[in-house]
Length: 265
Image (tube, rainbow, N blue to C red):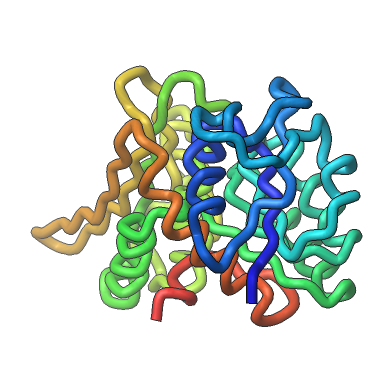
């Protein structure tokens, strides 16, 4: 069975790599694309390839007029929630590749997806190696009580922490042991230096030139440390394979699933 796909953010960093990948996959079909700055252009030529016969729409509402099985969103934090809810209301399965959503946002999306009977798969990072980093960190958190997340990105990244860092912190909080560090309320000095607490885990976001995306889980035990880290390069290629896997599996069951690792086995 061929899965029809709409890509929102088709001319963005990941979208430009995802459009030709979907077009080349024998079991997938690109039927619609959204990019406000390239509206009216062919999705193939707008992303640097051959024409695909798919005209880019300016808005998701316009693209949803074309029937599809899955909507993939790689846009911006301020619009992704609205896009997800609109696609769900239109009875489309959704793959969320955009960061910036909170736990409350995901709860609302999950409720809407269950009510509509569609699937949503969201991951802070669709890279296979980043997914392995998260899995190894979750394994370590069951044995080492003290862990903090450090999230690195370029100076221009608008959301903190990154989707990778937020998802890792929330999932660590669900499995980790009680920390031994002094409670933040008992510290002297600016408490902001201890980062933010997300899912029972302290998270520190570094935004500085020279980084693309990096995330590390730093574990500490008496007289030893363990660092589990993922570093991304400047290409969007690592995110394509994981996104295509999500597109193929998002419709397996209704409701929200977070993280790519559940699909890897």
